[in-house]
Length: 290
Image (cartoon, rainbow, N blue to C red; front, side, top):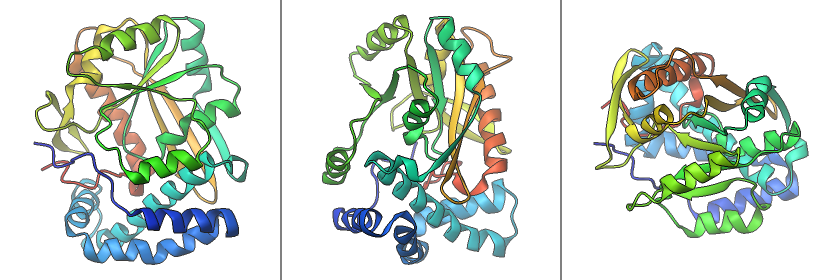
């Protein structure tokens, strides 16, 4: 059973304070407030603390003391990605620099005019991916398939202060009507994006090893990917030093059509390679490995 309920932490006042700092004093001023916010969660969020400590200690192999303090750094980096997302979405995109690793992969996919399936994870800051594509002049449409578990005043506030997103949303429906929307988008040479590392109670799952331990993953993205003729690409947007982001796009290889388990194996291998390089950007703050 997944212990993630689809709800985000934080208060509306907290977000407004950060937005004020970003707009009046700059992004780095907002980071300074994170020193205290991250420390609060470090002290008073025991469930997420235990989950991230386990990941760092047992899955990344850190020593006990190093893993303990790296939990704080993980909270801090996560806070930075939230601030960055708000800043970029509200018109401060030019304050950041961007690096694209895999542009030829996406260009090849679009040239074939069959659309494509992107699968990402809750690592880095994938929600700003559309800002990357604007930077490299790729004329494409991304459709994010989501369960959209929350509709909160925080989400509505962020949407009000943000520029209109170029990403469209396809909401998962009980009557499976979202499958028709996915097929329609692919037939129009558009990109469909899933996250492959979270599921909700009652959802069908597949099992695979990630960082040396078995874990459950949502079956839907990998079953759909295995049944479509469209190519599958693993995409991550990772935060680097300063105000710099690095987007990775890697085509799924050694996969078999109508074999979702092979797509999942390729995915977990891809995620592992990213986490080895960016160990503090794993943002699943729940007991992922149980």
